[in-house]
Image (cartoon, rainbow, N blue to C red; front, side, top):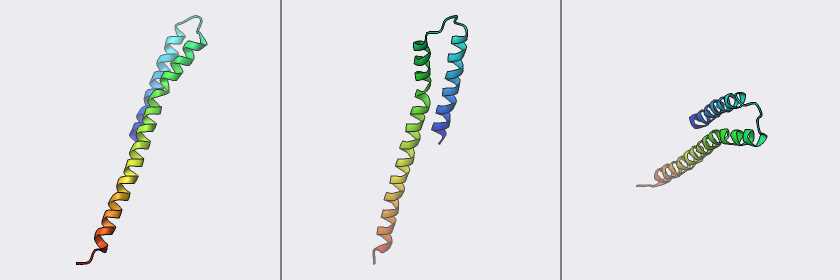
Length: 77
């Protein structure tokens, strides 16, 4: 969860930097503006991937652990 929050926080910081840079220019080219927005979206995208990877891994590891515990409790000595 923290990866997603950090990704969004860095996106906001990047957007502030983009808007500061464009504020100093007289004539802003839309292609340059779009490229800046595209770059600012990379941090939350990678944060989201990290979050999903962690959640899926946690689900799989808990499922494996539960199946191992169930197999050990059904054995008779």
